[in-house]
Length: 570
Image (cartoon, rainbow, N blue to C red):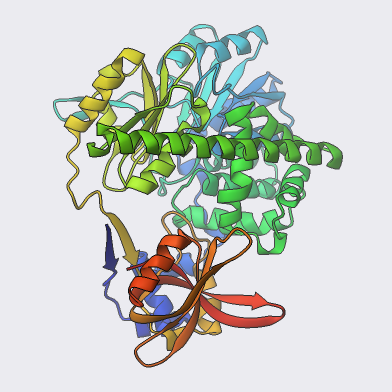
């Protein structure tokens, strides 16, 4: 059952509208996103690259820059060690490009998801030692690798950590004791002692800040590396960071750059996935380009995706882009099978009574466990862990709901894991097969979610009658972009709407079309893309319903008309 909640936040919408030359409707939408006060409203509507914070405000950034500028001058071999997801690959590329632009002797290494697992490990350090590397820089990982870093330091390596994950801690008498790795520099905005004003950066953004600071200190023009902002944008959206504050500027500017990108690999990927480049938005990154970039690290090696970004000729770029697209297509098929198996298991066993779902799919490819967990979470609206059989133990991926802090709950039963890490909404871990049942029982005993906590909350911006939906309003809504986590697309609602001639069509019968009429006789064309059969049944049973919707302009055969896309109905 869904819980529909209409935002009732108060402000003088007319005054805000007058001051910023926007409609009161837009002023209300901005207030709903908790953007309050002149400075914040101005930053939200008009923020540019010039408004980004100075990376030197990050704790240890000065040390990292000092060490690196010295290593570059002495021509010492530097290795960037990233991670195998979209954030890690882009962060690796940013550091590699930035450092080589300063004349550094730099190469890269990315762990193999299956063989190495997440983050820095002893094998990667031994590889660096064998290759006579002097300095390791991590990106999108490293904050939780205290043991591995100590080992690297003992063997004479200089190690700089750049990361954006939470700092691991142990709780002693209610006090948190943070476990910072003993690297030469640890740059992570989540450090308790870091005064950087914006905490929500992805790993690629932290890497970008480091490169920028390094260019400034080495007296090179940091505008030379502005183009890397397109990689920050891809990583920010792909790693599902909140699109607020600095992230908004990174994504807004980065997407404009991406439309005109000079990167052969990205150009080829945009072409082979059939995206109309001038219409490119966050949806395309999150659901089309991103999954292709991630597919390398899931089913093959993330080095494929890094090769794509590094492709120098069009021929190489097209070949690599097509490979990644094909890998992603097979990943999709595997995901569908895994989701079906998980649903079957939940529906036919006592699992469906659990507040926290722990689903063991031994034969599932471990790299898609997280995607399956996400899909199951959407279906049942509960925290979900999907476990798979790995080479030695069992590996798991978790995806959570807003009301459940997954990482905090896992910290409460840490003795069950061989290794674990994550944050409020997602986590990864490994444990012994014999501990699966204990984990399921313990995590459910610890769970204190209420009935209301596991009801899907639909956050509605405002009730908006049909006469207000105009092309001007739809155009004005673009000022709120980019949309994504933390800055959702505005959702409007209207009740007591009569449904007229609903019908399903499309070659896959996956679109429902109808007209909606309000109590005053105003009509509006509507489309729905969810479970169309269930929606049609509901409409035929009760022709007067309430809907939430996004307004849009439909262009067909040169004709433009205003319509709404139905999101929820009841």
